[in-house]
Image 1 (tube, rainbow, N blue to C red):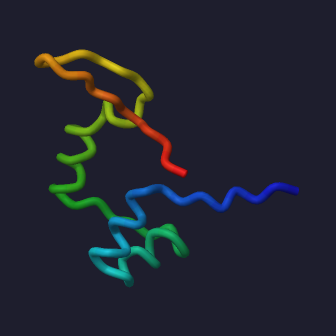
Image 2 (cartoon, rainbow, N blue to C red):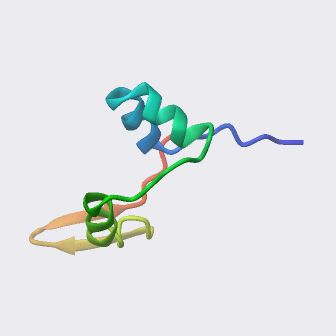
Length: 67
């Protein structure tokens, strides 16, 4: 049986910010939204759709998997 041991890159960022918060997210799947996180979710809704776009004379790449 293959076990997926990958973690989202955002969890590494969370770990650098606050180890306790990262543990709550990764191990206990605990999360509560605040006004800031709700706003951020709305602003980043397209980030989680894989794609390439050309905007403002540059390419924009979304949902890049890092291994």
